[in-house]
Image 1 (cartoon, rainbow, N blue to C red):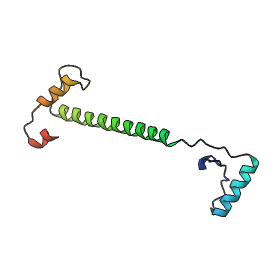
Image 2: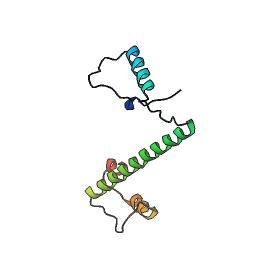
Image 3: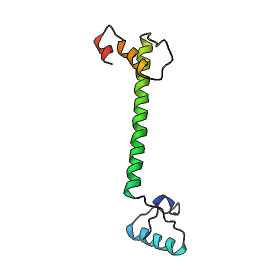
Image 4: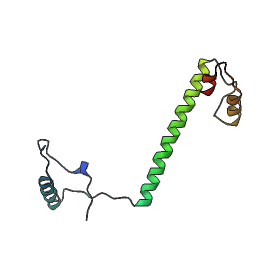
Length: 108
């Protein structure tokens, strides 16, 4: 059994009618002509590693966006950390020491 990527199957531009029978005949002709390329199907372990990597990148992006929002909020209120920051413990202590006049701003 071979698995073929649907996007890699050659298809005529004018061929817009799709039926199971026409698709099966086309695939059979392409297979006999040797024009189909099999693709590797990853096993469950590799797929789980890919899911983990995707979620990690997603979380990193969300953390970065949250940091930018906090930085912009502080800039609006004229608060700038005196030393260069990399969001380390010193910077987090400085952040936690910030107080605001209005409760909603403090919650933000």
